[in-house]
Length: 342
Figure 1 (tube, rainbow, N blue to C red):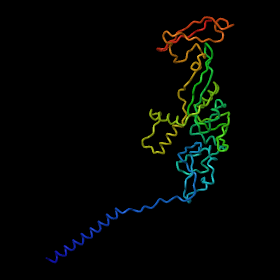
Figure 2 (figure 1 turned 180 degrees about the horizontal axis):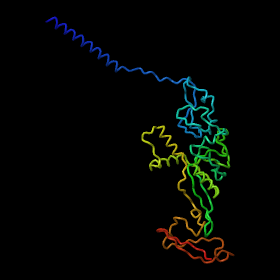
Figure 3 (figure 1 turned 90 degrees about the vertical axis):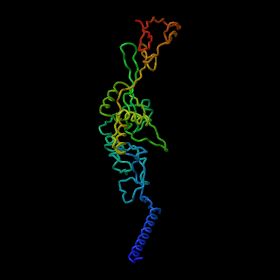
């Protein structure tokens, strides 16, 4: 064989062997498990952080704050440290400026009850504070605390042109946030149990227009509080989103979306009121005006007779004058109403 060809053959063989070894090492290295470094555990004290987004004016509750491990070199003097700070003493304080979820809470970020500007800090942008007088009967027995949401019910006596006065009650405002009760913004505790005390006034967060409505309502009749469930606001929010009343941009971040939804859930509602009258509760309230929705008497049914003091036939009672009757038809419903004669 030619010597030149033999050298080329040996060179090609050497290159093939080197290439095979390199390929083997590459495949072997790719299949070998890589040793990943364990995530370093933060070393340092626990600091108080926000468990969720806390907008300005948020009243601090037990589920709003929590302790979290924090790097020692990043701890500042203004932080609340675990083992040194009592979270229960911060309940009822108000957030002075926005705090994002997971951000440490500083001492200057919270306003304590009694501090100057406390109530102004508790109010949201464009909102007002109004005070409503209540009693144990009209104030849910004292089971209303700052941060709760209530509906406002107005009860009044309506004087008609004929017949007796009519008692009426209507829900005039919904989803109002309670700011304080008799200047108190925290629930008293005794041996780990919440002490419910009676209060005479409740301060509410409202819009300027609603503030005017509350001022007028106090001169008309008696105002009562109706405590709302936490789930009610979420249900109404879902309806508002479905109807398009509340719109969330498609490109909004989770933080922006949460902020928009919380703002929508916290807004007061002064929409159409629901009402009940004395005629809806008792047939003796405004007997000349039957309650709305009274079913028509069944065909052939005997008329219903109600005896009251002074009815004919009662011992010693003076005979009553005969009364005329008027038939009132509403749609397919017809009722017969007695009209006392003069």
